[in-house]
Length: 227
Figure 1: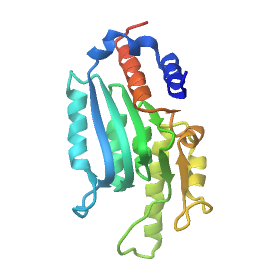
Figure 2: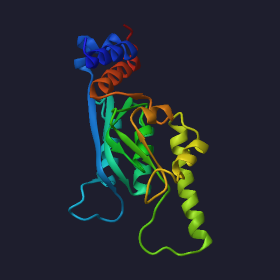
Figure 3: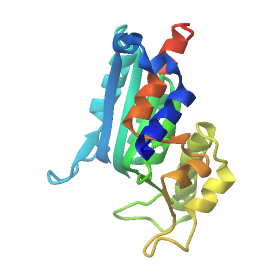
Figure 4: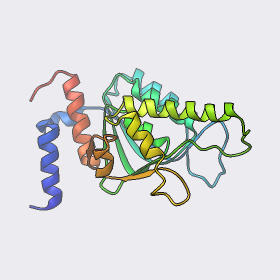
């Protein structure tokens, strides 16, 4: 038996035989992708691939209100971006009443970390990466105490959200954020695949098949179906 088939069999054992029956075809799942850089209140250059928060927020509201949507699969491959906009999307996803699952593909860096943990269950592919680093700001910065207080407040908002939606603790997250031994031009930590699971950020390593298996099982559990 191939390694891939063994992994698939393990996924079935973990997430339920429900994924193999015909009822799977009846579940209505909406897909949401967050790719490139998360654009905030300022427009990014036309050459930058972006996800615009003003498009995502109404879409999430529609999914919540749409009776045909029974579950949401979030696909992530983002370098991060605007903190306020990223947190707004993450808070919206976290407040959705329907089953939600996220899958980190290429990466979910910076403000992409709160997005990855905002769902009910999260996956990361073996080669997927997550970068945790302090808040950064471009442009003119006033060298005064209120500026640093603002930075600290923003970092605390991010840490609190991640800790409350994952198994990672705030103190450990701050350690990873302030790590000076990994990134050559910055502070922070890169977590690859299983490392993100060991740190408690992500629930499991898996691909699109495992993500669908889990989401279908969660939807059927919400319907009160037993197998």
